[in-house]
Image (cartoon, rainbow, N blue to C red; front, side, top):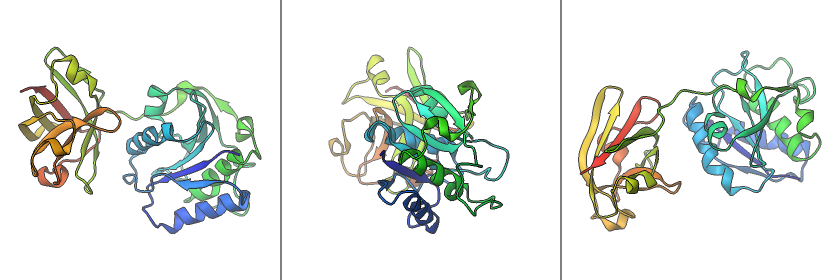
Length: 278
């Protein structure tokens, strides 16, 4: 029996998440079910994909992830289970949530959920809560071993998986750039998809000052020269710094402050960071 991990944009303490847990318990009361991240940015499939990329390496092979960020619920978008090349499974609407996973981990195979078999009995005709009625139910059956991957439903080409557009990281002889994919107000961390190792490749090392520009579309929101440091405590309180995130990507922060609220920074496909030598 595999673990099942739930991810949603429903918010912490949600009745809907509890209902999904209940469905899993009805499928098999011995199934090990955990919450991953129920605070994914609402309707944001790229944030869902980034959150999964963070979680996937820290759960055992064979874990089933049920990800429900589904602004198109009830429409013709596919409900699917992706079998990843690292041995994990993701149950999700095929709406862009698999974007980063397809690129960075690889998807071995994908199957559309057959709702005639893998849908909670009595939920037919309900079109607004597939997270409970389809994804949690099908995911629990897969994790509990009631069905195997082939039992999910018909296979379709991996090439047909929906991918969401985003700013890809780039490196030139003088700068690196990429998308801001994290800007949470709790700690005010500004995360990107820029590999941190690129800074060293361009001669930027800890202790240097670097020039950071943040843009929202064509509008410059932040531009300053700040220190590149190992961690928050290497600069004074209130100092803005650039550092490596826990996933080894470029991140900006304010030591014991909040870069997101202080500078009005958001995240997503319109938000870009550029880093140059200071």
